[in-house]
Image 1 (cartoon, each protein chain N blue to C red):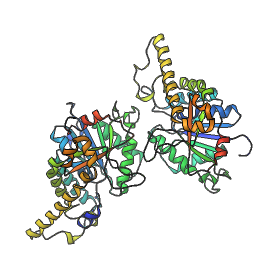
Image 2 (image 1 turned 90 degrees about the vertical axis):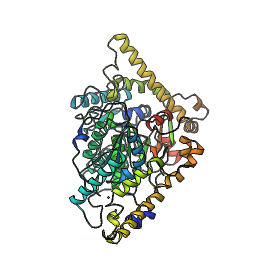
Image 3 (image 1 turned 180 degrees about the horizontal axis):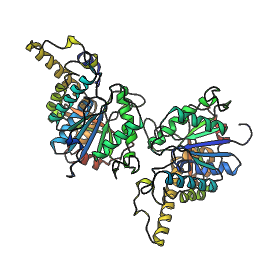
Image 4 (image 1 turned 135 degrees about the horizontal axis):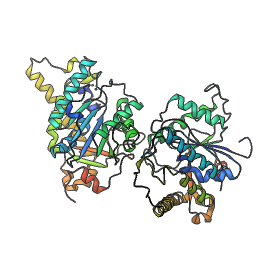
Length: 272
Length: 306
């Protein structure tokens, strides 16, 4: 780390994934003056039941910008079609350049066994950028990093070939409303229900709309609360007795292909 | 094609056809189950789920076997289009025996890759079949074509439900149950038998299918040789070779029942399971719909009532 400020870049598959797994930790880092960037590797242009293509991609880009303002960080998407992200060399180079341009100390992505092919290939691409970001004459147009960043995976529920194993957990109770505000802003995906919803998902009357908004927020609140239970052991390690009262959390697993931080460095790096 | 050490000496082998008009028709909406299986070569589905396929078909359910390559290098003495046509004819013969529909994709054997084009092809096939159940290899099976079938089918899971992915083909409103067929590979994780089906009642059909795949088994496929194939005029030698193939398969197909006795007991009860000689096993893929035990019994309507 060049200064006491860390530089963090998070890669998600779609314009909402970084927010889903790391909005809380991202907001906490940003509040302390660390530089945080969220990158969606696809533009999300098939992620709705009624709209698609360029207009949806633009709409979702705007949603990310709103999230960025809420969280105090940069959230952008790459112009790759949703559902079509492949582990190509061109994409690997894009990811390498983004990590280098950001001068990242920390890189976070999906695991390569998450549920959606775009998630899995985001995981593969970021894994494949680890180490390569330090090789001077790979992507020689972009100055290489002198040190391999720390690479981490965000949480998923898949068990094979191995389940997610959190190495560090962050309590996000102090920023949970900001995280939930993001999902309110990501309205094409949550309020309107994204690609698997129907025209009936959002009621037509104002009372129904308000109820729908509230229901979405409470469902997400419950989902993020379940993570505190999932990572209770890791929370206890960092927060001691206070861990029992933590309601919301995010967890991260160290990827073997990045620099391997010691327990102390990891503890210092992640906000309490 | 699967190679087992026991079979290696015997089989030492991997079609191309435009779908028939029947295959292009919309599937009947008759309330029956709809199963589609993807194998790498024209023999893999028959091998891995020929028994379960025959059982579903016998009950009027709709079963389709898709070979993702045409098998055109799967022989020691012939190759190319002629072999692809021959192998397509073989799986059509199997389909008559087992009661399924068969399709062979015109992709060269040994050259199946994880491309967007192939993902779309798989996605469309699953949607057109309106599949309730999708079966494929695991992505860590022995042959690259097998592994990439596994990856392509995994990558089609969930995407089949996304309306504007492949918008030319109506999406499924329900993610099918995706299953893996059995293999022997241990890393990064071994096959788990979540579902085991006794196929004793259809084993003759499955063995007849293996006999019909003669380029692969009787003649030994890509690693075979002329030494395996007797002179057609020598009736005794031909009969002996046929018997040898059948005996090897009887032994091979009795393996799953032994390996998966506990899984069989789970579905048939310990007493009935102990008597099963031939079985097929399936693992539930995490990327499809996750069926409850009750739903598994609906999708596999073969098990005695609990």
